[in-house]
Length: 175
Image (cartoon, rainbow, N blue to C red; front, side, top):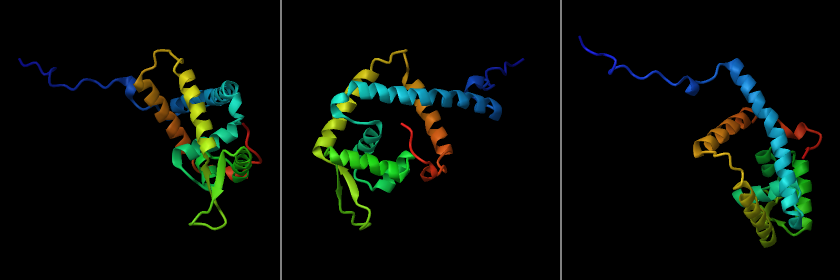
């Protein structure tokens, strides 16, 4: 008599199997219900931590995008952040008034200048990021690399699902 149990593949871990659509919808609804309060609290905390920069949530979003991706037009920033062009333009105007960004000619489009960080803007967003990293280092909870990667994967998938939403039909952005 031979032992064929050694040749059998181990049964898959049920916790690693994709969720059925109904259960997936319920669990993702839980995520949505946490994202809004998390977003608002995180931005309020950052505004409390960094009052010296006088960066609103909207201005900070513009500065972050420019820091990460380099000069862009207002419409490009609006699409990237799922914000209306009008709202992004107001944030760019505010940041320009504080000498944090500047408009430069756009060789690809005469009427839509590129917006780029100034030295002051780069320093302001850099200082904010340093304080934010320090604050976030205290989150704790014994989170693992896998935990964070899974969270990013879920949120990225949820965001991609909503990519077709037209943000310019919104009346105004709520921050």
